[in-house]
Length: 294
Image 1 (cartoon, rainbow, N blue to C red):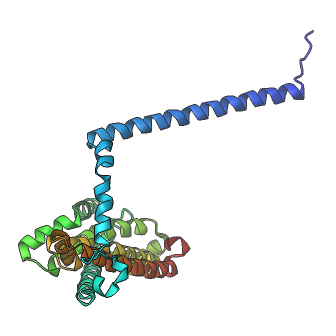
Image 2 (image 1 turned 30 degrees about the vertical axis):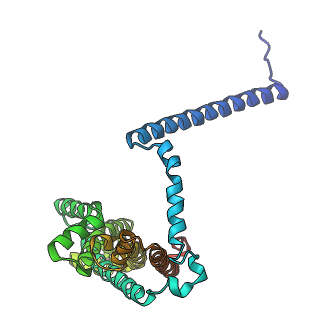
Image 3 (image 1 turned 90 degrees about the vertical axis):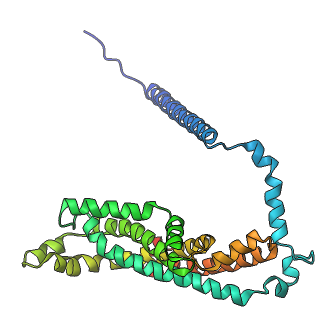
């Protein structure tokens, strides 16, 4: 006859504590191992990208001194001591900034229109045929993979200097980006209304119009507004290659060493972007919920 051995509560607690300490130790070891691998990968990537910390710290003073120069007028005073002299060309800069906003608006509107048409063919649950979905997805990938400034440079070469090149570049890039986002919204849509309308003998176009579009309209508008925010910044940079807007004036000021003009133009761009971000963020919040305001 064997006697049953009972484990006392104190012994059970000691066993549990030991198991807990082992689990914590294993978790800590995995964390340290992951951090070590991440650090090693970062160092190797930095070496491959020729990131030289010595160069960074050696010439960091040049970076600081440039900001010191753009905040100084020709008279040697700080820009904020004579705002009239600093912002002497504000009428011209605002006019060119307005051109930048128009480039962004027209390009975004064209891109959103094409994305609206194409996204139904790219979404897995609404595309009429697999081969068509494959073709449209590759087309959208091409449109958003090539940087917008590259498109702008190509169109400047083809059509000459001016806003048209910027509009076309933003339209193509926005088509690719918004087409991807729109199709993801459609893929998350409820398909029961589509099945109900299809059962009545309705066409594919009618199913999209009456069953899918009402579900995704708010999401489309939210992403289009977000894309407009991005495109305002993109249009400001496209002026560097001659695609119109205030970027052309900024690159001229940089190349001719008009230091105070550089800071004044940057100020107008930054303030405008802030206003647009706040306004469109509020609109997206009203359309898409609180999570879209950030």
